[in-house]
Image (tube, rainbow, N blue to C red; front, side, top):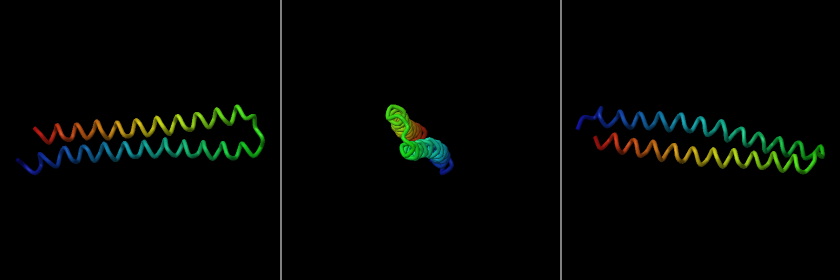
Length: 86
């Protein structure tokens, strides 16, 4: 088996991992920023419903981001294994 035949799928997987991690960090940062915003807004005594809604949105973003990131890695890993078996 040629070394280039092995390196190409690994490089492809590394690219997927790099891009996926970047997207994960962007959305994770938005979630953290929203959490900080909720803390600041709680000090100015906004209605509790507003704060709870924003906290819920923050948690949904973080959960969805994590699930999608892990599934992205899993699917890319399966693709890597398939490409290496060729």
